[in-house]
Image (cartoon, rainbow, N blue to C red; front, side, top):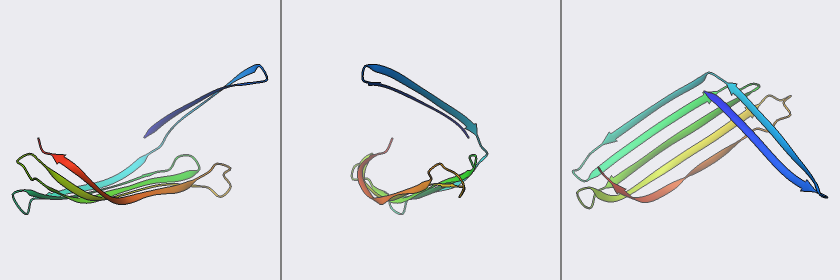
Length: 119
């Protein structure tokens, strides 16, 4: 995986203007594993699930993404219907104890309902 980031900030204080430019690039070996499955237990009902796990070791830290979902689609009409799923996303970035940069994790999880279309 290769990451490029650029930040540009411009500000004016007391009539004086200043611009700050910062950019960084780094590459890292990425390990990923995933799976996907679909089953049709009925003519109009589709069950599915997928999972993905990615791990990266950028610089002095360790980062990972855990992403999975399980759901069902019921086709009321030939190509259109309703769907529900449970979705889980976790983003984690752990830094070395001596690092001055921030780390942490964020988790999003919950149920979703939606319209679905088959083409």
